[in-house]
Length: 114
Image 1 (cartoon, rainbow, N blue to C red):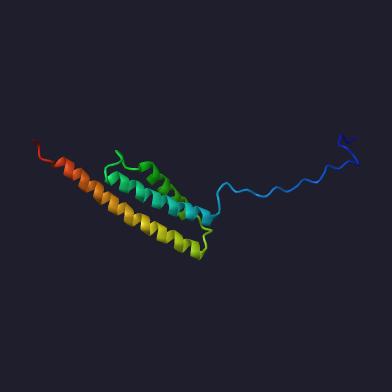
Image 2 (cartoon, rainbow, N blue to C red):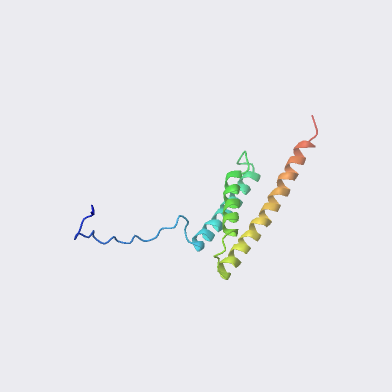
């Protein structure tokens, strides 16, 4: 005894294009490059006194993107080279910002009292 529909076939399902949750690697690298550029501008604004706080939200977004891309094993050699050069640029900026923040903090701690 069969309860199924005999003789009737359902219309063929159309294959939807597969949509990955993440954009392509080259697009992610471009976005990372833009975020590093934006972070540099935001730190420049902070060090010039126009912003009260350092841009830690942008910094965290850049570091998250760096970690996510660093874990990706599907990068081609060209993509890996671009990724490594972006990470090197970010690391140089991060050290520069760390030293500048440290000097700024030391200057406020050792300020003569009037």
